Image (tube, rainbow, N blue to C red; front, side, top):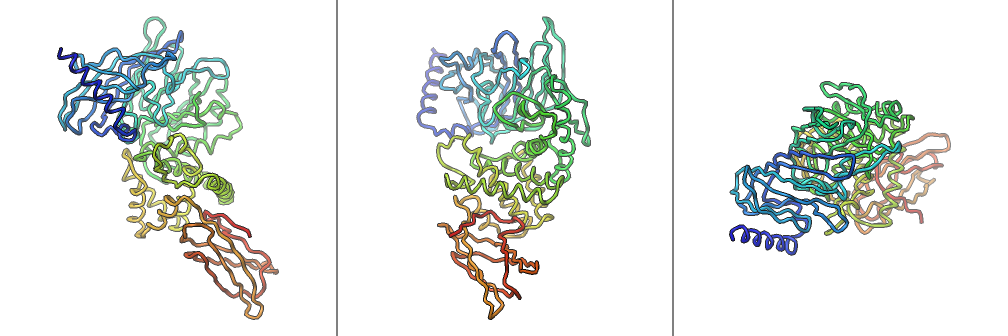
Length: 535
């Protein structure tokens, strides 16, 4: 009777959760803070069934009698997880698993730490990808971004909750297993099985908690300080992969010098089979199988994903509307690395290309970088705003502040939020504190205004006064406060650069020039994100 009453209460709580709690609130799940996950998993070659025993250690924030976790349940297609038991010590706890939510009857007071163990099994419909590589060899890869960990791991599946994690994987002995953290054990078991244990002691979000299993060829480690850097490649492409992923050590070294300490114990660069071209899993980055060509064309991709180890993994956005703090940073940091490698012309070429992409994107849809649209599909936030425009925002901060001050701001931001979560306002506060500048107008117009500056420029030369008269009009609903550089060149090849403050809908400036210019170039240094409107 008491157990039946508890189940009835859990069913009622589930209905309340599904019908009255917003998706956003459910994701946050603020009553608990996960401290540690221990995922004990078993896979085989005969089927795609995952058997799991998960131990969850969590801190109780508010008094509770029901614990809520995310876990996709078994569906009509035969895929999804079935929970067999939930235990606290040796005591079985009542639970309900419906609508992809696991509710557990558990009395707890605020301030307590609790541990439960969940036994479950099933065929993941997503999140853990069973596949084959081009050579026909079986592969198994975690693919959690953004909130797909719940397909195979019972968890609090939101990036605002970071936890330490360990994976203990029992699999056929031919697999090499990679995961987050440091290798604790690799042990042969009876019946041709092998147990591999990885443990990550730095808190990370579920989006970057993964395992990878394949018949890898693994390179010898190159050390950057105390950090081993390795490449995990499908054996048929061993030499090509080792060549393509070799720049990783230099990239890691560059970002450590420019940003700050690397947060994790290793950097494994892994050829994989997932839905993304690259995925920045903490300490174990997964790249698309096609990234290996043997032609050394992966440097930009490597730089982008390795930059994520600082921005997205260690310093993580608080919520999805602030995803530019991950993707915008990775975009700009990878460009800065390529500029370091190949020079300023390479940077300008990348900026011009991305500016065109941003303008084209904005013509199709006008949404701000920090997009708080209710019900927005998180996957759709992987767009030009988050990547290219986010990168441009950082580039414009760099040009406004200068290199030295910009890097000091970046370093301070990373130091403040390493292993924590940050919002766009947090970034702004750090940049203002370090720079001593009020950046409110800058952050507002570039992050929260859905437009980009659209400028029409006209000019004429007054031969009686030897003056150039420049007129600039803003063709947007919002009035931006920007500075536009113009380079004017006369018939003798002499050039001059003038910076024109554009803070109203229409501005006009005059300046002296001995001869009529024969060429006028907008923004020669590629410092400003804008659209040129020709009438």
